[in-house]
Length: 237
Image (cartoon, rainbow, N blue to C red; front, side):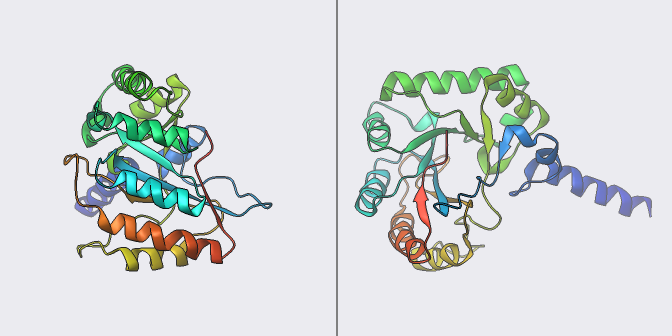
């Protein structure tokens, strides 16, 4: 019985910090997190977000798709992927009305102190502003959703919000290869007003991965959402 209790306790503790959906820690820090955006009765909206860029291969093509569809999105960019080569891509995001937030490629960031995490995010925001000409939105998405009390302390200290995604609305395809058309169908079927969708235009380690599936999924997803009467917009900053 003691072993069962310990196993359950360990599982709950792990979920508090790593669950890819809002859990106990997020309920306690509700004002510092966003896993679903406010519904808009005047314009039902799905909030499309992209993680792990900027990717010099895929991100410009995604921006072309968004521009053609008259849609906006939020790009959570990794500091290590922001270079002199990719800065113009981020500059284009700002110019075309998209939101830019901060992302991490390090799960273990959550083990740092609130001060060290805040300093790291401030340095990343400063680099975005220096290289791309505008300051990012006060939104931060931790790698794989791994978060902690100290991380929530950091975003509170900075006036940021830890940003997740709505239940099941990510482009993970189990252990099967990601395939654009099937991902688009699944996301278009499940998404509703106020939901946050995440698709990966990059990779947390590889700075220029093949993300043709993301371009295909986005190309098919936006029209499918529009057919359901759902606008596609960037998260409110």
